[in-house]
Image 1 (cartoon, rainbow, N blue to C red):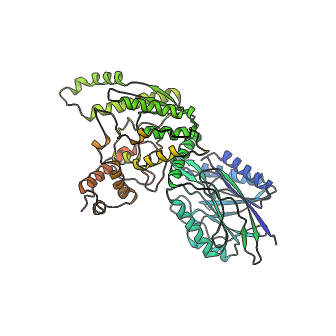
Image 2 (cartoon, rainbow, N blue to C red):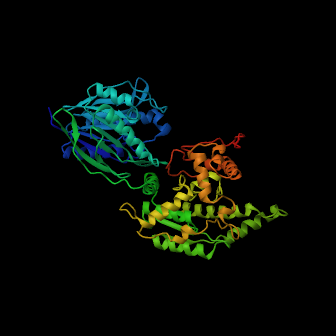
Image 3 (cartoon, helix red, strand yellow):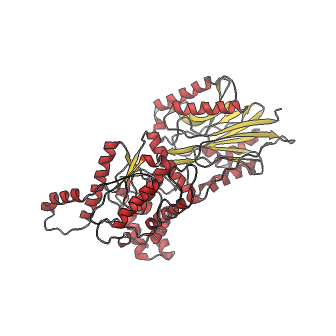
Length: 547
């Protein structure tokens, strides 16, 4: 009986729909494993197609092309290690979430996900372990690893090692939960476990990698980095009692919660652009905090030479804002253009004057400024091919503190799921830290004045955000209870918040749903991200009044 078993774990970034490109990545990972003497090379769940495919996975043509590509890949591997790669499989008219096991030029097994999760995939039958050389490997696909049943069934059928493949997106604080679930599988079955995850951005999701190997007893043997493409060559040795145990490998640092959120936003933006074939971005750089943070994220994702800021001042733009925009652009090394809106604004107001006669000035005139900025920025985007980024944080998105077709115009919003209070913390963290994956300069790239000054849209004299909203520390605490916590208004009031303030915030959140439906996509950090995680009716007469 073999005394050692070698596995190559390929934590890789798939591009959705790029079947040829994804399988070329898989082939290269297999070749790397072959060169290292691997018995088995593993890629993540649904790597062949990319994920999430939403309703594309239901398309018969896409299914057929994916199956054909995987069968062709198997024929291209006539010798060497077994390859396990996630992809769809259709059997008996039913679509399955499968892990394809290939060796000696053919498909030797397809492990079908057994768990029914309510998605497009049918539940497969329980299946036993697969012999790879002298080792019986129990494969777990997606949600099959999250509950005890399938792992227990595999252990009872003779599995000596559990290999779980995942496409598990980043959620703030979610790493502890996934680790606890896998530790439970190890303890329950007294078997070593490999957990392999996708990495990279797809639409609004970011897969964070962080793959790992646990030995019997749940001691960590190997931990791959978060958010990076990475490879681990893991050697298991059979001990005297027949148990397999992995040799100690590298344990990558995971970073704190602020770093993880920031890395998710940088990765999500960078992959959204790269996979869409977009090389450059632009944004309105107001001298305020939110646009400064988005510029920093973009510069870290793409490099400063691919980011263009545009200052669009009006008579209400302070000298300090002009100075701060210029200082930030200089610190980051990004281009900055100045495009005043006074002329276009005067022309619009003159055109509307006959129709506005006798009507007092109000928020309409403020919104004209925001919409003119959106128009000019979109014109630059059209002309240059650079994607316009929007800069609204989750606090503003939640209560509708934004102008639709104005500052909401754009193709992607890195801050969509980040509350203002946490955004301040992340900016301070970035000023104090620099990592090899960051493409912008190190040091205090965002002046403390930008972070500390009172937020303002500068659409009228002396305007401050807190003229219209509670202080962000209060607003965000209420929003986290209402949105992430799903708490009723009465519970928020019972927690000590002012009743009128809570009721007003809840009304604003409900009333802004129609705006959110028309907003740009953005990086998802939490389960309660607007749109992908929380969808409210736009027309709804029921209100939580706190009774």
